[in-house]
Image (cartoon, rainbow, N blue to C red; front, side, top):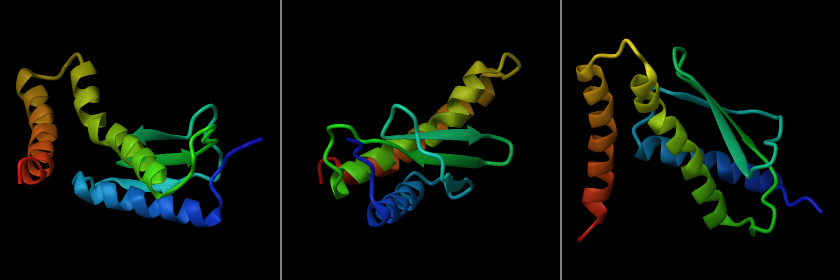
Length: 122
């Protein structure tokens, strides 16, 4: 029996996508949900770098209970793929200079430092 989010849970997931997009400073990306279901996963995301478009899909949660925590964690997982997209693309680009790679790396570090530094040890 499929275990897919209902309409209310899909809307909640969309809200979590927006939340994590803001936390990870990804407001330069347009994130849109596709009506097509993810296959073989709770969710998936496809990134298109030049237009800064991320299309995410929800799928079957299998044995995972669908609640606010699992929806938020799944949304975070997908948004982290978008967050790391530039770093991975730069690292794979044979023409990228060491400075370009370092810049992409520091973008990730700066956000993680802001997010983790304010919550850790306080």
